[in-house]
Length: 157
Image 1: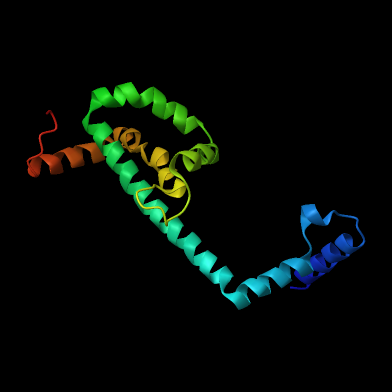
Image 2: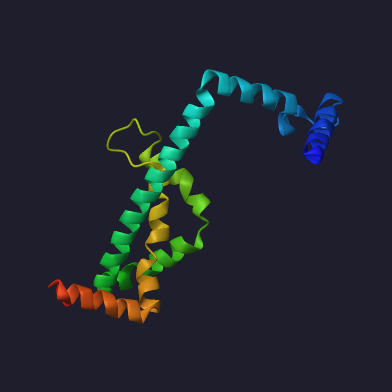
């Protein structure tokens, strides 16, 4: 605890003595003041709730959509063969690089009905790797095929 207090005191001194630019590093006293203000007004908790809600919804929607897409690609080898180069290229991109175009395409905000959040859509390329995972685990593929056969789903169709 003493180390953290000492670090913050040295940081505050460096800002006040103008050894470090405040616009680049912030000021511990200013950060604390804004933290207290956000807590007092309830804005910080509200924003934290929205962030948590978007994260959970993004994970659920992205995982379900990506898993469904991966399963469909596993069931359709022709489609998987056609889309494989695109999936490999998308997988090679840093996921953070996909965020700006997704935000431009789909918009921002849960208040927009019919729009997909960028956090939701960003999960989909990562989850579309499921057909590759299934192929590398042939025992699981056989298990799924057995289950589908028992359910009367024709994989050859």
